[in-house]
Length: 442
Image (cartoon, one colour):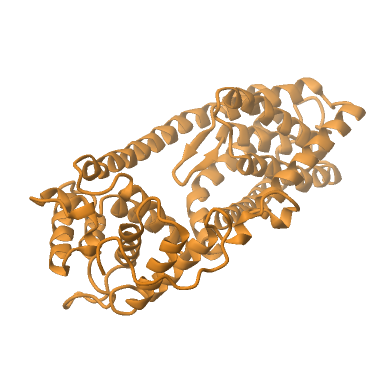
C-alpha cells in the first residue's frame, strides 16, 4: 500500500448525507426515534410531573409555607454550588440532602408535618429551578438528565414515606421511622443508580452491565452520605426546628469543598496529559489533531466493547500519548503515519514512548499499553496477547493514519476493508468490527 492510498473501495453501505448511518440522521419526532429515548422520556416525565405538582399545590394551598420556603432556599443554594465529579457526574449534595430531609420531615415540634408528596415535588422542583438559573444565565447549563434524576429521587422518597408516616402516625424520632427512612433511601438510591446506568449506557453506547457496575461503585459513598444527611436533617428538625436544617447541612458543605478539589485535580491532570500529547503535533511529527482523534475513536470503540470506566480513563491517557515516542526520532515519519513505517521502527517508537511515560512514575500501566500497541494480535514473543487497550489503539491509529482528518465516506469504507483483510494477524477482529459499528453509527 502506498502512502495515504488504499486498494479499490468496496461497495458503500447506506449512509446519510454527512457520512453517518441513516438511522442516526433522525432527529426529533417521537421519543422512541430520538438518539437517546430514555433521556428524553425521563426529562419529559419529570418536567410534566413537576409542573403538575406545582399547579396542584398552588391551587390547594401550601401547607406550612414558611417551612416549605426554607427548604426550597436550601435546595436552591445546593443547586447553585453543584459540582461535577469524575465521569462527568453532576451532583448537588446539599440540595439532595435538603430534598431528602423535606420528604422525610415529621414535624417541627408543633405537631406532625402534613404536607403531601405533591408539595414535596413542587418545593424540590422550584428549588432546583431557582438554583440553576444563575448557571444558565452564564452559559453553564446543567445536564438535564442529572437534574431530572435528583427531582425524581425526592419525589419517589416522598411517595414512599408520606402516606406510611400518616398511616402510622409518625410524628417524632423513633426506631420505626428511622428504619423506614433508611430502607427507602437504600431502595431509591438503587433505583437511581440503575437509572443512571441506563442513561450512561445510552449516552456512551456501552453495555448496561458495565455501566451499572461503574455507577454503583461511583455513587455508593456519596449516595449513602447524602441519604444519611437527609435523614439526620429530618430527625433533627423534628426536635430543634429549622435550626437542624442549617446545622446538618454545614458538614455537607465542607465535604463538597473536598470533592470539588479532588475533581479539579483530576481535571488538571487530564489537561496536562492532553497538553503533553500536543507536543508531537506542534513539533510537526504528526498531523494536527491526530492524537485527539485517535483518543476519541479509541474511546468509542472501547465503549462498544464494554470497557469499565477506570479502563476507559487509562485508555484515554495512552491514546493521547501513543505517538510521543516520535519525539526521539531524528527525522519525522512522512505525514506522521506510523502505520506506514516498518514494524521494527514502529516497535522502537512505542518503546521510546513507553520510556518517556514511565518517567512520570505514576503511569506504568499506561506505559505498558503504549509499549505494546504495535504488536500483532497474538503478541510478539513470550509476553502473550497484548492488552485490549493496546489492540484498540493499534486499530484506531491505523484508521486515522490512513484516513486523516477530512477523509470522505468512500475512503473510510476502503480503509475499514483494508483493516478487515489484516484482522486476525495484525489487528484484533473484535476491535475492527467494533470500529465498523462505531462508523456506521456516525
